[in-house]
Length: 165
Ligand code: COA
Image 1 (cartoon, helix red, strand yellow):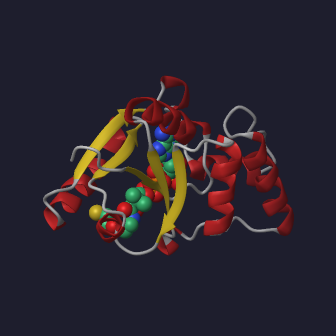
Image 2 (spheres, protein in one colour):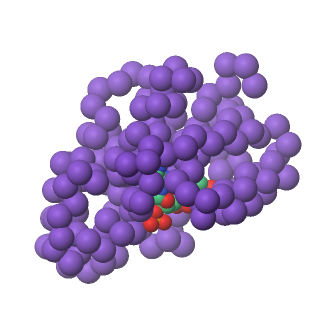
């Protein structure tokens, strides 16, 4: 486990201040972090993987301690490819717990060397979700203070093209 890369996986469709808060705090604790964007076609994402990666990169600015990558298929297979054993997830509320607990145990069942570490999302962002942000943007509401400016711009542009994904 010592020195193993820490992977923060998610769909990030799109990245929010809640995710960025976890990323920044995790880097402060672990020193380095790989943010891994799941293709997750079953979630029918609004943004392509490239767009999701680009929004994370633009929101973070230059930081050599953070790598932004993507993966398709099972998370444990990606961990193996990256020679990593630690998964980081953010917890917003009690309602997240059951799903996260299930995922952590399922991943460990498939590979007993995997550890999942949870960080509590800052209170200020505990009500955020990518789905609600997309809905607000789609209906013409303001997402200021919820997502970084480059993300807000891309949401506006996307909904000008039409559709909720
Ligand atoms: N602040 C604010 N919102 C947050 C947040 C935070 N810190 N952390 C998560 N969220 C929100 C997200 O915006 C998202 O909202 P949405 O559902 O409205 O879109 C929701 O919480 C959960 O999203 P996310 O963190 O992106 O996780 P996910 O559930 O979409 O993805 C994976 C989880 C990618 C890790 C999981 O699907 C996976 O491992 N997939 C690969 C396939 C696999 O291995 N499956 C077996 C798993 S056992």
